Each structure stands twice: as C-alpha cells, then as structure tokens.
Image (cartoon, rainbow, N blue to C red; front, side, top):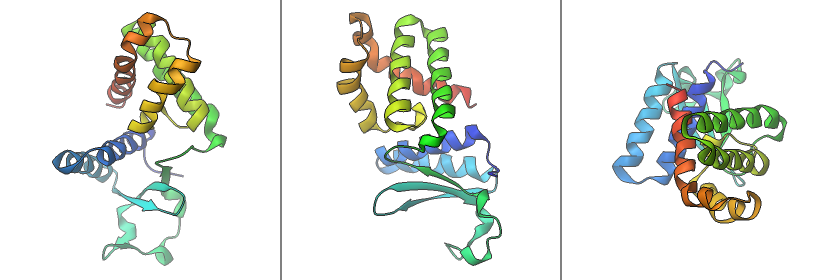
Length: 181
C-alpha cells in the first residue's frame, strides 16, 4: 500500500506536468517544489521513459544508493506509486477518477457559478472518458484538445460558456490546488 497521501500524489503529478511544459528556472522551480513535497514523506521521484509511455515513479528515498535504485534490496515494491504521464490512465480506476473529476467540477460551480461549472463539468467528462485520468493531470496538449475539439463538438456550449472556457479550465486547476493545501 502506498504511503503517500492522495493529495501529495496529485500535487506531485501536477508539478511534474508543469515542469515538463516549462523551461529553465521555471521548470526547475516546479521540480524543486515536487522534491520538497515528497521529502516531507521521505520519498523521491524519477521519470521513467519506456518505448510506449512516460511514467512518474514515486518511491521511498531509502531505495536509492549511489544514484540508482537497488531493486534486489527492495522487499515491498507496493510502496512505490507509478503514474502514467501521457496517454490514458487505468480504466479499472475510472469510477474513482470520474467521482474525483465531478467533485472538482461541483466545487468550481459552487465557487464560480453555473457557466464556469458547466465548462468544468465538460472538462471532467473529457478527462474521465477520454483519458481516465484526474482533471489536474491534463497536459497543455490535452487542454488544447479539449478547448479546440471536444468542447466545440461535444459540450454544446452556450455563447457565455464559449467566452469563458479558458478561464473555466484555469479555475479547475486552481480548485484542485487550493483543495490540496
């Protein structure tokens, strides 16, 4: 069983995406914040790139010796958390992910009104149904796909929704960030 709280896992994933999309000092700031957050739990992170996907691996810091993980010395690998950073998530987790995404959309609706709430709900649908991942894990490319393709074709947005969709997505990310504090 993982030792990290869910909000720490979500925030670590979000910071990793932000670092990936940023450059220079900004990217390093996100990585430093991720490192600080994980250090509170004696964990560390690494990004593993396989042929087909990129995975964020969160694991106890004690597993690392001389800069490498000593796999043969690990008794309980279930302590690690692996998070796919691209492509769809695990469809077996869909119910839990969809519940989370809908809760975020409700929070946006309650805090910012019906128009932003409807857009947040559409974004929750998109991330749950197309990627089986939490809304906060969306990459810049996925947000662009939502805004330029999915939203226009599937959300049947009103003119008011179309005008504020970009702000609505920002509110989704801010809602998750403030809830994890």
